[in-house]
Image 1: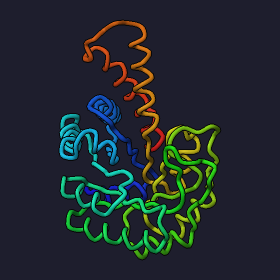
Image 2: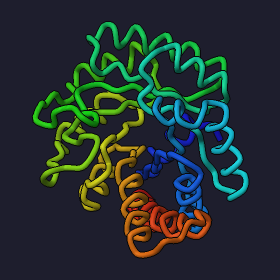
Image 3: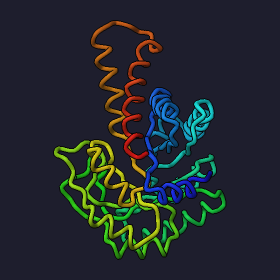
Image 4: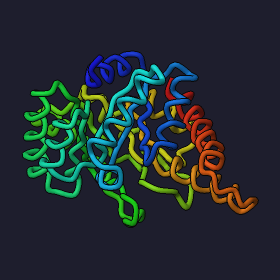
Length: 271
């Protein structure tokens, strides 16, 4: 099933699909083990940094092969694509879905460039995600607040024909200093103003209760990245501090299992 169709399906069911970033074979394996265990669909996400690290064809090939090997329904998605050109490269490489992130542009320019990506994606029957409002990225201030305006979301969805829309309702990328307060009233208003499936970025560290409520109010895709990197590296650091093992085939598996356990917990929140 195409991702854009799957998002509409889960939207009708009041559920969401978990979207997780992966950074190497071990984190990919942990994510897929979790999805296979729970027989859950999964979106495998790659950022520009991960593409640069692993190589475009290699990264998408790993993801596609992994989905087949673990017999998991899933899709490969470009996360926070910063240009129309990158989105086109990923579509040509076999991505099922691309995000054009024009959230820091003017509304007019965001609409114009997103429309270009939507037009390109039609040639591949691919899903297109966009972002509206300010969702602090890693390294950016979490004090700045610019929530998605309901009227803007309505205009943006209509003008672009985008398949999914990431909305700013109080989350941020990375870890939080205190529990995030999500604007559920705004989320419900956006849902009522447009039929496009909605996306929640910055899912790492958001309490389960808040995630479930967000899904009940229209979130159809939940992004988790930072927690995956963190639990893999923290587990690895602890293991390495306790022994002098040099065989990575013995050291990496516990960190991969930690990722799998984390992702299982996240999957249960959106089922």
